[in-house]
Image 1 (cartoon, one colour):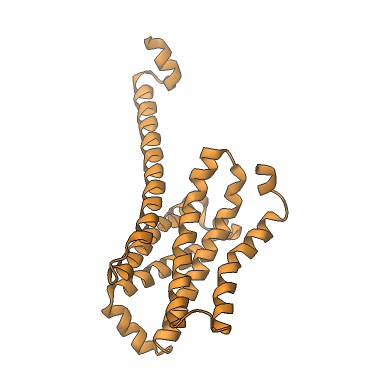
Image 2 (cartoon, one colour):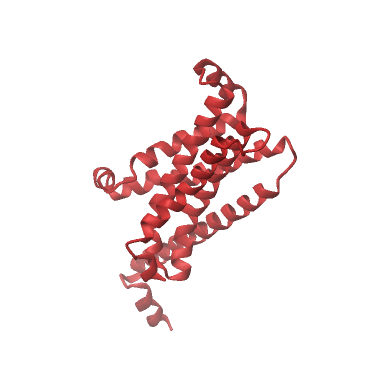
Length: 224
């Protein structure tokens, strides 16, 4: 599988796949094939893909480590950028089709409706991640600062879930939201478990060093 993922055609194929939902929505709007409420279909459709792509972005690391397909890591950046792209499309559709691009009305609506405020905040937090998603930015920020900044993705996906929850609350339809929530909970739970294990390992190293300067394996063997 790693050979397939490293194939030169893999990234162009992923790029085209990422554009496919946008092409579908654009063609549906052009052909008047989005149902009785095209504006809602565009807003909802683009918003759904933001959450899907955020879940895909978060899934890369667990899938890579569990499957051994290390080459999956090369697709995470593109998935994250597409999440921001669809977030921008989602907001533009709302601002244009619902608010007629009237800035005062947009700002008033954001302040008045919490679910729009939460969604807008998520998009604003995604902007610096998209702006620093290239190698020169990593070098400029330094790897440690870059990694810290990009941990914002965890807050972003939680805000996205809250935004989606409030949208569905009006219709009491939580089936799809529950699927996303379970996926996000599983991926964040997996990370918390790993962080906890690394923290425990670090504490054992510190304790062993304090006792005699030995590495954990050496200390264990001396105590058998």
